[in-house]
Amino acid sequence: MECSINNQQDDFSVGDDLIAVLEEVLRIAGNYENVEERTEVSLTLVDDNFIRELNRVYRNIDKPTDVLSFALEETGPEEIIIQEDIGERLLGDIFISVPTAINQAKEYGHSPKRELAFLAVHGFLHLLGYDHETEAEAREMETIQEKVLSEVGLKR
Image (cartoon, rainbow, N blue to C red; front, side, top):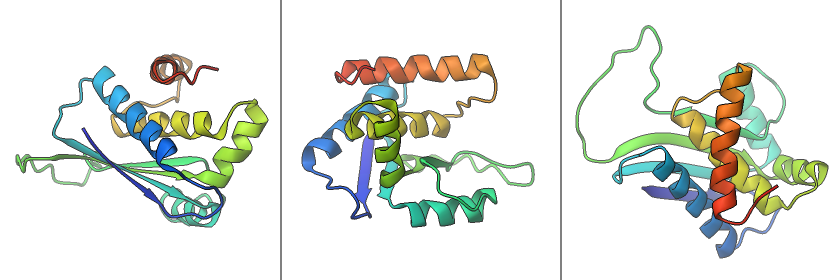
Protein backbone atom coordinates (compact mmCIF):
# COMPACT_ATOMS: atom_id res chain seq x y z
CA MET A 1 0.00 0.00 0.00
CA GLU A 2 1.32 3.41 -0.90
CA CYS A 3 1.04 6.10 1.79
CA SER A 4 1.45 9.73 0.87
CA ILE A 5 2.09 11.83 3.99
CA ASN A 6 2.16 15.62 3.79
CA ASN A 7 2.95 18.06 6.56
CA GLN A 8 1.13 21.38 6.07
CA GLN A 9 1.43 22.78 9.59
CA ASP A 10 4.12 24.49 11.65
CA ASP A 11 2.79 23.86 15.18
CA PHE A 12 4.79 20.69 15.77
CA SER A 13 8.09 19.53 14.33
CA VAL A 14 7.50 16.47 12.16
CA GLY A 15 10.60 14.40 11.61
CA ASP A 16 11.33 11.37 9.48
CA ASP A 17 10.81 9.05 12.48
CA LEU A 18 7.22 10.26 12.95
CA ILE A 19 6.51 10.00 9.22
CA ALA A 20 7.88 6.43 9.30
CA VAL A 21 5.61 5.49 12.23
CA LEU A 22 2.55 6.96 10.49
CA GLU A 23 3.36 5.06 7.29
CA GLU A 24 3.92 1.87 9.28
CA VAL A 25 0.61 2.02 11.18
CA LEU A 26 -1.28 2.68 7.95
CA ARG A 27 0.38 -0.29 6.26
CA ILE A 28 -0.26 -2.56 9.26
CA ALA A 29 -3.91 -1.48 9.33
CA GLY A 30 -4.09 -2.15 5.59
CA ASN A 31 -2.68 -5.64 6.14
CA TYR A 32 -5.20 -6.35 8.92
CA GLU A 33 -7.98 -5.36 6.58
CA ASN A 34 -6.57 -7.21 3.55
CA VAL A 35 -6.26 -4.01 1.55
CA GLU A 36 -4.67 -4.87 -1.76
CA GLU A 37 -1.09 -3.78 -2.42
CA ARG A 38 -1.99 -1.37 -5.22
CA THR A 39 -3.97 0.88 -2.87
CA GLU A 40 -3.06 4.48 -2.17
CA VAL A 41 -4.00 6.60 0.83
CA SER A 42 -3.14 10.22 1.58
CA LEU A 43 -2.54 11.62 5.07
CA THR A 44 -2.13 15.36 5.59
CA LEU A 45 -1.08 16.96 8.87
CA VAL A 46 -2.75 20.36 9.25
CA ASP A 47 -3.43 23.08 11.80
CA ASP A 48 -6.69 23.84 13.61
CA ASN A 49 -7.70 26.59 11.18
CA PHE A 50 -7.41 24.30 8.17
CA ILE A 51 -9.34 21.41 9.72
CA ARG A 52 -11.93 23.82 11.11
CA GLU A 53 -12.63 25.06 7.57
CA LEU A 54 -12.92 21.47 6.26
CA ASN A 55 -15.25 20.63 9.13
CA ARG A 56 -17.37 23.72 8.43
CA VAL A 57 -17.60 23.15 4.68
CA TYR A 58 -18.15 19.38 4.65
CA ARG A 59 -19.90 18.73 7.97
CA ASN A 60 -21.51 22.09 8.82
CA ILE A 61 -19.62 22.11 12.13
CA ASP A 62 -17.74 25.36 12.65
CA LYS A 63 -15.00 24.17 15.00
CA PRO A 64 -11.75 22.22 14.77
CA THR A 65 -11.73 18.47 15.16
CA ASP A 66 -8.94 15.91 15.47
CA VAL A 67 -9.31 13.89 12.27
CA LEU A 68 -11.41 13.93 9.12
CA SER A 69 -11.52 11.25 6.44
CA PHE A 70 -12.78 11.58 2.89
CA ALA A 71 -13.33 8.22 1.23
CA LEU A 72 -13.07 8.27 -2.54
CA GLU A 73 -15.02 5.03 -2.87
CA GLU A 74 -17.99 6.28 -0.88
CA THR A 75 -21.03 7.17 -2.94
CA GLY A 76 -24.23 8.95 -2.07
CA PRO A 77 -27.74 8.02 -3.22
CA GLU A 78 -27.58 10.27 -6.31
CA GLU A 79 -24.05 9.38 -7.40
CA ILE A 80 -23.16 7.11 -10.29
CA ILE A 81 -20.88 4.19 -9.47
CA ILE A 82 -18.14 3.77 -12.05
CA GLN A 83 -16.42 0.42 -11.93
CA GLU A 84 -13.31 0.80 -13.97
CA ASP A 85 -9.97 -0.80 -13.22
CA ILE A 86 -7.48 2.06 -13.49
CA GLY A 87 -4.61 0.33 -11.71
CA GLU A 88 -4.20 2.02 -8.35
CA ARG A 89 -7.06 1.92 -5.88
CA LEU A 90 -7.38 5.43 -4.46
CA LEU A 91 -8.82 4.91 -1.01
CA GLY A 92 -9.09 8.53 0.12
CA ASP A 93 -7.68 11.35 2.21
CA ILE A 94 -7.12 11.68 5.93
CA PHE A 95 -6.55 15.07 7.58
CA ILE A 96 -5.24 15.31 11.15
CA SER A 97 -5.07 18.52 13.17
CA VAL A 98 -1.69 18.37 14.88
CA PRO A 99 -2.49 21.00 17.58
CA THR A 100 -5.67 19.14 18.53
CA ALA A 101 -3.79 15.83 18.57
CA ILE A 102 -1.11 17.31 20.84
CA ASN A 103 -3.74 18.65 23.25
CA GLN A 104 -5.50 15.28 23.30
CA ALA A 105 -2.20 13.49 23.96
CA LYS A 106 -1.65 15.68 27.03
CA GLU A 107 -5.23 15.09 28.17
CA TYR A 108 -4.92 11.30 27.77
CA GLY A 109 -1.42 11.15 29.24
CA HIS A 110 0.46 9.72 26.27
CA SER A 111 2.86 10.95 23.61
CA PRO A 112 1.94 13.07 20.59
CA LYS A 113 3.38 10.27 18.43
CA ARG A 114 0.90 7.78 19.87
CA GLU A 115 -2.02 10.16 19.41
CA LEU A 116 -1.08 10.97 15.82
CA ALA A 117 -0.65 7.26 15.03
CA PHE A 118 -4.01 6.49 16.66
CA LEU A 119 -5.75 9.20 14.63
CA ALA A 120 -4.10 7.96 11.41
CA VAL A 121 -5.44 4.44 11.99
CA HIS A 122 -8.81 5.79 13.08
CA GLY A 123 -9.12 7.89 9.92
CA PHE A 124 -7.95 4.97 7.79
CA LEU A 125 -10.64 2.68 9.21
CA HIS A 126 -13.25 5.32 8.37
CA LEU A 127 -12.00 5.24 4.76
CA LEU A 128 -12.74 1.52 4.76
CA GLY A 129 -16.30 2.10 5.96
CA TYR A 130 -15.88 1.55 9.70
CA ASP A 131 -17.86 3.77 12.01
CA HIS A 132 -18.51 4.19 15.74
CA GLU A 133 -22.17 5.14 15.82
CA THR A 134 -23.04 2.17 18.02
CA GLU A 135 -21.22 0.66 20.97
CA ALA A 136 -20.48 -2.51 19.00
CA GLU A 137 -19.03 -0.53 16.07
CA ALA A 138 -16.90 1.53 18.45
CA ARG A 139 -15.54 -1.62 20.14
CA GLU A 140 -14.68 -3.13 16.77
CA MET A 141 -12.73 -0.02 15.72
CA GLU A 142 -11.00 0.22 19.10
CA THR A 143 -9.88 -3.41 18.91
CA ILE A 144 -8.27 -2.94 15.50
CA GLN A 145 -6.71 0.39 16.49
CA GLU A 146 -5.13 -1.07 19.63
CA LYS A 147 -3.78 -4.13 17.75
CA VAL A 148 -2.12 -1.90 15.17
CA LEU A 149 -0.65 0.49 17.75
CA SER A 150 0.60 -2.42 19.86
CA GLU A 151 2.51 -3.76 16.86
CA VAL A 152 4.59 -0.61 16.73
CA GLY A 153 5.04 -0.37 20.51
CA LEU A 154 2.49 2.40 21.10
CA LYS A 155 0.27 0.71 23.68
CA ARG A 156 -1.87 2.68 26.09
